[in-house]
Image (cartoon, each protein chain N blue to C red):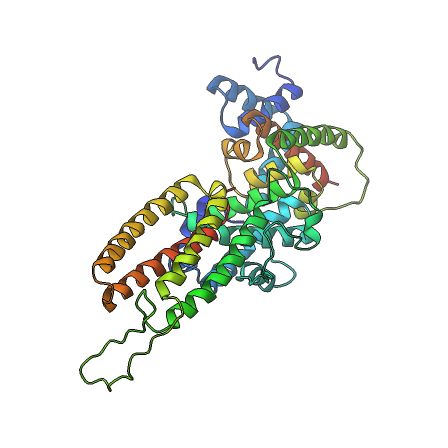
Amino acid sequence: MTSPAHAASAAGPSHDDVRAAQGGDRQAFERLYRAHVSRVFSVCVRMCGSRAEAEERTQDAFVRAWDKLPQFRGDSSFGTWLHRLAVNVVLNAREGTGRERAREVEDAADALEATAGRAAPPGLALDLEQAIAGLPAGARRVFTLFDVCGYTHEEIADQLGITTGGSKAQLHRARLLLRQALSR
Amino acid sequence: MTPASFTCDDFEAALPAWLDGTLTSEDHATVEAHRDGCARCAALVADLHQLMSDARALPELTPSRDLWPDIAARIAPRVIEWPAGTSTDAPMGPRDALPARGGAPSWRRWAAAAALVVVSVGGTYLAMQSPVTSRSGERLVVEGPGQPRPPRPIAVSHPSASETLSGELEELERALAQREPELDPKTAAVIRRSLATIDRAIADARAALDADSSNVLLDRQLTRVLGKKVELMRRAALLPART
């Protein structure tokens, strides 16, 4: 998985396509789609926990990107901009206000505590993708954004509408729960 | 934290900060001393490091199908059928069941603007295809060297291109005024400044035509500037709403 920092260096060949797409060139935008769809889909899958929903969110993200392209000023790479936009699309699709997001994260924390206390059924092996998908939504998002995508706690707190302390706590709980799931 | 009283629970509590590298050097040493002497906590650290490493190395995933056709359909320009005489508040289909909040929904205002633009494009095409006329309706012909002699000018009654565009501009102005509150304020300000510049050029061209109403070049200049204004207002009317 390419982190936002890595995405900046991967954006070189698409500069001309970005400019052309900003001017309304759909073929250029299709090339951008082809170049970035895997990264966008990956973050959508891991944040949604469902491939079917992730395909919808990926479409939404590219449609939103098309609409917002005129506002893209190149302060970050196109890949980084698109990645953040996709994260916002996922968050906005299932949540409303920041308060609702924070409540869901807190609920997820409770769910994690409860799940972590259960005895693991013997013989059940999960790979990391499955284990991530099985996390409660809030923990899954924090883990995906921090450990998979390379966001900072400050960036996560900003996007999820929680505190940096909440992000750190969620991350630690997610890691412990994943460790438990993977050791089954 | 002192090494002697430091328990496994203390270790787990300090672990996030230790992994983050935000502990003081003294606490850091205490945590590491406990890890080095406790097989259970050492295994926990090793597992978490492995998990973090595995997470960073997760491969990119691909959708089960090509999503581009659906995306392309969603970003394609849409031609909206808009029956003559239908107001923007008239029923448009199942989405009308949605409750209206704070006036017409933004998608409907956008759709109204889009429909107007579709009509406007057709109107402009017809206007620009019309022969050049004076504002009195007389067809005007430009003669040039090497050109076959044109037929005798014929008086026609249809409105001039500039008159047609002026009518469109009134409609587009209303559409833009409706959509303006949804647009990014900075973008709206740039649009308004650009329109003011074009308006000054229109006023200059009209003043010149008042002094020389049969001047073909001035009439064309007015038509050209009006066309620019129509184009800008169409673009503005179709801009996405800010989010």
